[in-house]
Length: 133
Image (cartoon, rainbow, N blue to C red; front, side, top):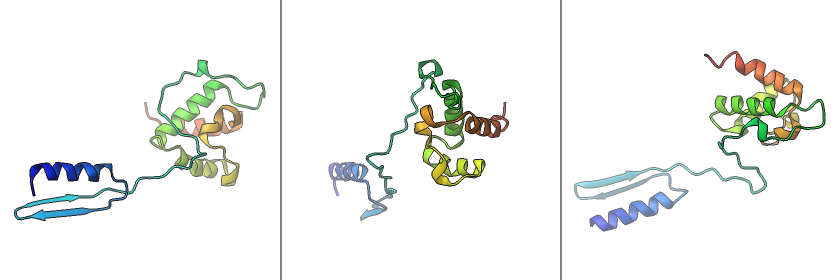
């Protein structure tokens, strides 16, 4: 196998999403490549980004029971840090923490308009003491 062919093959493997393992052996030369299947996202599911947003750029709700933009940002940041950015994994934890069915927990991407003062308090009380200074 020639050097150019090997580089071309590695490039094709790198672009592939479903390869779980490849082993190529040619004389004394061998290559082993493993790739985990990529996670597919639903089309209608909001995409989470790690872009920094200040609370002052968020619009406050007129409902007095909805958390302030500062509380929303702080709660989202703390949950994002705990779950390393995987906000979907946080929903199950929040349902357990708040002792409510999973269907009653709003996804963090919707918190600008759905996170209540009570939920923000439960989240922040639980996470602020554990963050370690």
